[in-house]
Length: 242
Ligand SMILES: N[C@@H](CCC(=O)N[C@@H](CS)C(=O)NCC(=O)O)C(=O)O
Image (tube, rainbow, N blue to C red; front, side, top):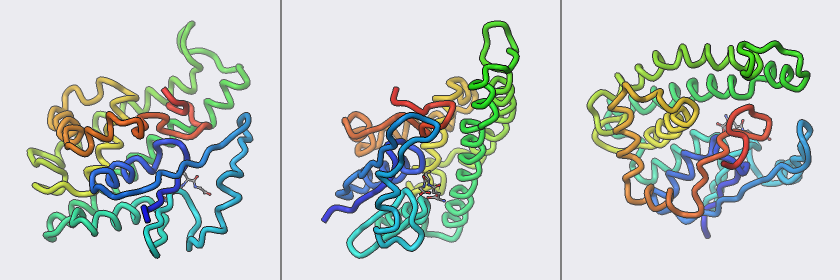
C-alpha cells in the first residue's frame, strides 16, 4: 500500500515532504484537497467533511498515512521519513545543526507567510481607499510591508549563508531532511525577490546542487511537480497556479 500524503492543492507545508518522498523513492498518493467557491468564504468542506474521521490524534493538514502510522505536523512527518532513510543527522554535531535549522526555517517561513497573508493590505485593497506610495503603484500598505520585509531579508539570508559555510549540505557532508526545508524556503524567496541571493553564492550553489539530485531533477521535470501556488487562496502573493 502506498503512503498517503494529505494536503491542500498548494505547495505550503507539503513541498519539502513531497520532495523527500520523491527523493527516497517512497510510493505515495499525493492527496490534494481543494477549496471551492468564491472568496473570502471559500468552501473547504472537501477537507472538513473528513477531518475528524481519519483517526488522527491532532487532525490537521498535512497528514501522512503509512501502514499503521498516522501522523500530522509537517516536521514530525519529515523526521519520520528521514529516520527511515538515515537522513536525520547522525553525529551529535549533525543533530544539533539539523534541530537548529529545522526551527530557524520555520521561523523564517512564518515571518514570510505573515507578510504574504497580511489582512491589512487585503482590506485596504478591497476598500480601495488606501493612498498610493507612487502614482501608479500598489496600495501603500502592501508596498510598505514588502519594503520592510525586503530590508530585513539580506540580514536573515546572510545567517543561512554563514551557517552553511563551505559545507555541501546544511548538516555537513550528508544530505538530511533539513536541506529539503531550506531548499523550499530559499526557493520561495528567490521567486518573491529574484535578486535576493545574488551576493550569496554558497546558497545559490546549494539550490543548484539540490535541484541536480537525480530524483529531484526527475520530479521537477515531471507533471507531478508543483512550483506554485506557494500559499493558499487568501494570500496576497503566489495564491494561484502560475
Ligand atoms: N504546525 C502545523 C501547522 C499545520 C497548518 O497550519 N495547516 C494548515 C495548512 S498550512 C491547515 O489548513 N490545516 C487544516 C486545519 O486546520 O483544519 C504543521 O507544521 O503541520
